[in-house]
Length: 117
Length: 111
Figure (cartoon, rainbow over the protein chains, first blue to last red):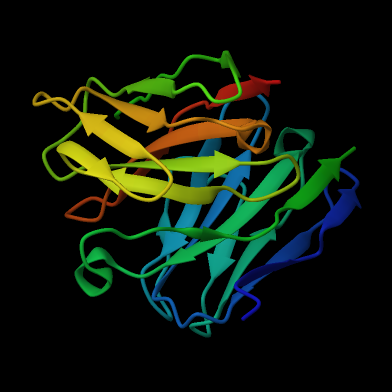
């Protein structure tokens, strides 16, 4: 099992450029998440999905779009990158609590380091 | 919106017990508390999760008082390899979905 993988690992964009980050999981998890991590601010939820074809906004969704066309994939798009989007992006997946029992954990990918100049 | 507050950093020596407390004053009835460990250049890794009282697994214990406004992660007999950043997470999947991470506590274990 590869678990949760993210593509690419690093990327440098110019302001105004667009890109898509790909997250893939092989654990057949129902839920998937995108977070950003900035120094001193912990992880903040951008968007999440509770199933194939569904997405919802998290704490900091502005400037990002997502799609979950296949259960195993969750894509994060930046339509017009801004320097404020320089961050490390983490994808995660989990089972819903009703299916996983007494506790449920999120499995995180290795992260994508994005720099916008 | 719930906020979670943690100490920025802690130092400990090998073999000691370490307790890291997270404050979540606005925790809601359906919220769970989870702790994660993160090493540099890696994603966070699950440690333990609880709702109330005490939970113990093979690596840690989690203490949650009756009012649930705080939680304490206890790491017994830490080693150098426990040097990492520890995050608490308040989350709910009932009604409005919520995932609020704390800002993290950087634990340094000294020889």
